[in-house]
Length: 300
Image 1 (cartoon, rainbow, N blue to C red):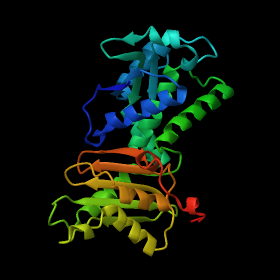
Image 2 (image 1 turned 120 degrees about the horizontal axis):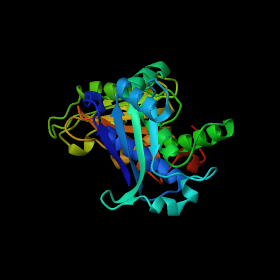
Image 3 (image 1 turned 30 degrees about the vertical axis):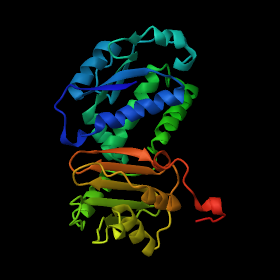
């Protein structure tokens, strides 16, 4: 299950890794709804194209941010979880899942809204994809009750990925990690890693890996960033970005445990490779059963 990302316009440089991110968003939406083996297409287009679609399909002659075209018509008051037979009718053997339809996103409007709300383009695209996914599964927002139910499901799904209403600029944090990576000291592995921690008070703290002739004395970028934060009085973290110079730099087990000391399981962990984009996981996904200060009766 998942998505098929299609571009009606040239793919921009800042869209690297987008298909993986939106695939995770779709999977989280399906999990929240309790639907298995489903998927849909996500088409990215511009103002002119989506205005034409809006006019031809809805009679509204203006550009919008997202349109949804479901393949399944659910009975009023019912959503996908309560209509498994209708879903099975949409099984596509070529795709290997039940095709729920199409999500069409206006990249121009997504950029505008990301700037207006003060968050990253990837965060805005994640919200639009989730919004469309629940439309495709029978949700709507014509009444306040429907709108509330749909919003609750969107937040439930996106919350699983650490994508919340809190103002976390994933792109900006990842860029700071890239800057830190340039300072790495790695004469042995030649693999540079940079990290940047976002504290709850809004401050950011960078770190890079620095190696040692006694290899076991090497310090990872994540723990370098955490040490920088702690010495400056930061004790609670909202997010961390990590970048590797030639490959995705997933944090090691020790770093995951160190991060858990100062962070919740829902904290976004933004991980990528230099020049190749990033993906976002929660710390709880990377360390499902971490030992916490609370387990030992300590409150940080």
